Amino acid sequence: MQLELRHLRYFLAVAEELNFSRAAERLHIAQPALSAQIRSLETQLGTELFSRTTRKVDLTPAGQLLLADARDIVERADRAAAKIAAAARGERGALRVAFAAHAAGEASTAIFRRFAEEHPAIELELVESATLEGLQRLVVDHEADAAFAWLPILHDELESEVVFSEPKSVGMHPEHRLAELEEVRPEDLEAEPIVSSWEHYSPATLAYWLGPFRSERTPIDLQATSVDECLSLVARGLAVYVVPESAQRFYGRPDVVYRPLVGVGPASVALVWHREPQNAAVEPFVEVTRAIAGIQKPAR
Image (tube, rainbow, N blue to C red; front, side):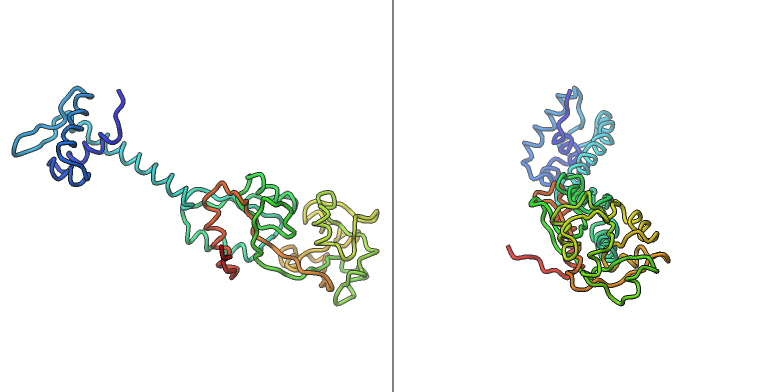
């Protein structure tokens, strides 16, 4: 035996109103149609659910038994439908946001806070990537819904919105010869060992971060993956490390000093998301990011 949800809704309306006319009005159907649906339900169950007279409608014992279960079933069905509809509108569920190192920094904190306030039913899940380029790949492969990524953007599948830009700096040992300078220029780095994630850098990433003083990795340059690994080599005086200016705040340590890198372009962070997102929560997250960053929504 299979009970249809609509039959339970009809039953509940009559049980709560104890009047077929009022129940029909509530359901926006004709009274004869409602009576026919109730008779169909009673036939299916093999018992009467209501005792009817010209003056009064009452629940039978069988109707009393069905009432609690019918309410529970209909309420659960309505909650499930509401969850699905809300998820489709991006109003509940989870949003996976990827990051690498300290990308977006203070800006991401403000964005996460505003998003949580405006969309409390959506849980933010942070997904970390060890490399800058792996970060964007997470979004391309739909393993993350969005990401705060340092430029350049490497994939045509991604939409992006620059959140902020900042100058670049050079990290070095306090006794390094360049530490005596107030600022470092590209020509100062041409003969210096540079530590970076060389094995993970595309030509575009290399040009964006190190182009003015490196066209490719040289024999003196050192490979490391994480920020901590790079800084460890810098602290031992084995290399210098090109970073965004904010790295000094997030990765400050007494055995590493930073000097401004002048004569080069800034480092920019963008929110990236897939051109064909699989999560409806991406759109409101993008809107919150634009609001925090003061970005006007592009005209369509």
